[in-house]
Image 1 (cartoon, one colour):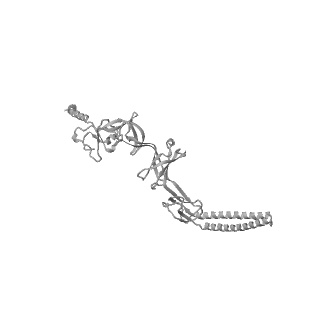
Image 2 (cartoon, one colour):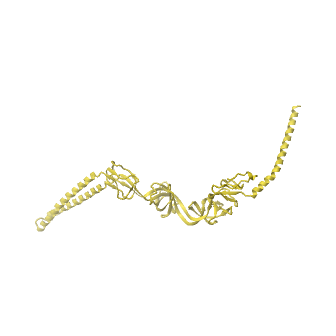
Length: 416
């Protein structure tokens, strides 16, 4: 048996095996065709459904809608004062600390008054001396007046006595003024608060020496606060004094109402923005100076506007539409929109026409959604339906089309 004979025999058996495999494959394909046709028919007969949680849907209703301009900035006290030393000297007492409440006129600190008391005594003595000089000059003038009337002295002598009287009276006035200045300096050694408020800073301690106008303490009145916020120049024409502002401060559960009180007439160097000042009442003292706040300035407000979340509005070729839930299925509904702004639950768009109050719509764009697709609404924590047509809303949000049901329904997974 030669080598060529063995090769020919091996080739014959290989060809025979290939022919048998091809025939078997064609037979299996022919038998599986009816099952595939049945599966496709079943898929076309039972359309896929989309599942939604209640939070994925929104019920259209009427409410307040605001067109707002966002602002941000720091709060500061409307009324605040820096208490400074009016006289120089050594601080003997500081009677308050940061955070303490004070009333107008309350004593805050005391400066050593020994030198100023001595100056008062000196000025008082000078006043007494000048008063004595005035008494002598007065008596001399009166006597010379009598002598002049009787012709015993000349007019010249009387005029000299009258001049001495005027000088003595001027000296009394000067001494009285010096005494008042000394008394004022003495009283300034007792430092008092100029208004009601809270001590926000204590800049001096007992034993320190301070100069005139040396800063001692800071007092703030928190009953009224002011938000200073920059506004771009292209938006400033929309802002007017008296407009309502909703102020949100980190740490406070609710927003605080305020109003535009002032508008700066000049732009800020560098940013070219214009500062707007919002007045905020703070009767309970919850707000503090320096807190950062985000605010919404109301440019326009509608009390009863039919609105939908901005995320629910979709636009195609310039036409707006939403997906509504009607008779258990998705329905694409064209809408005419109006003012954009903020409602109680976030950004919203006014619905002028196309929907009625009470309509249920899909809250957000979940990707591929088809008009007429059946809808199932799942209860939170409940089991998902066991039908093979169900598709999770998460898959739709990712833009995945509903898959075809498996050939054997008994093997489908339970729930989502």
